[in-house]
Length: 106
Image (cartoon, rainbow, N blue to C red):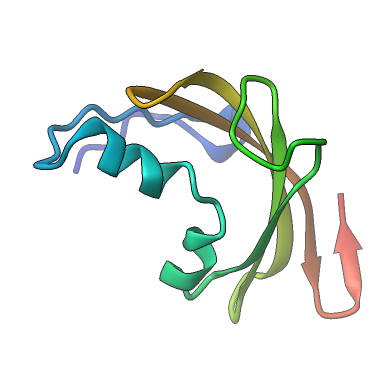
């Protein structure tokens, strides 16, 4: 892979378009279930909705708490930026804090 010059400090983004051999409703059921993510990831430990309603909706927020042996622990708050069930979903994450052992960095 060729290096593009992007740095983490530049807050790079990723956007992916792909075809999935399933109906939009089947896919929506999976991508809109944030509780599924920690069960599929060894790094993501827990998630919870932060706003009333507790489900995917435009503007809704949820927090994910992650842990990695080499990187420590951190939390990411994600915002639903696109929500048109069952065909469109968009999420933007904001890194909240990074913890290593007993120290927390902003």
